[in-house]
Length: 209
Image (cartoon, rainbow, N blue to C red; front, side, top):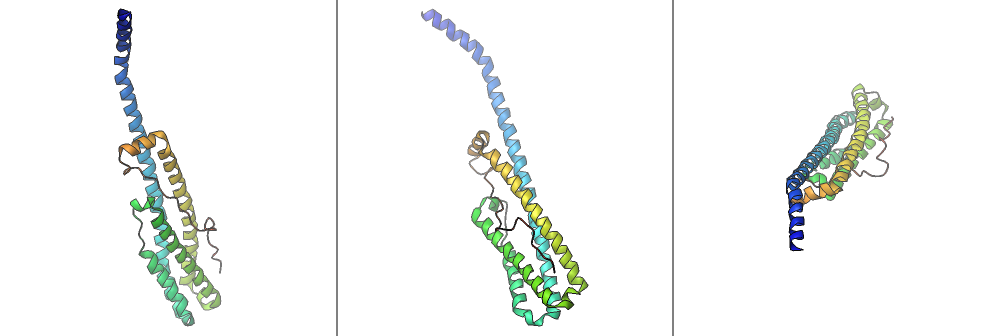
């Protein structure tokens, strides 16, 4: 009986020992592949966010010039124009770093500040409706046309960012992603926060004047 067990154990070891290194190697290769996949998806999120940030900065750069032109013909709108300027100033104080892209609270503050900027442009459009000479200003209307294009690009950029985040977070939730996440100490791979703008923000603002 003992001899039979010994022979069986020997046979098992003869089969298992050569196979074990192959299993370990295969596991390592899968881990590397998963790691590289998450790195790629993470980089796509960064790239998509950079595009959002660039479009928001473009919009912010338009505000001072539009306010300056409005002041020339809308002296009685001083309070409104001050609100517009203050909204821009407040928004510029909120910076989002790569680490913040996984922080719901900071992302919410950023969204709120950008919403205030969008509302500021709405106030400028309202002023333009009241002052025909402003609507007739070539410089103002040129900025207005650029603003319309920027709002559409912001909308597209937000959608692309959310798609990238969804793909990344989905992969991270899979078993392979969770294993790598635990191995890296929950530092390298962290869930991203999707861009949750206010209701109605899925449609570009109507800036028709």
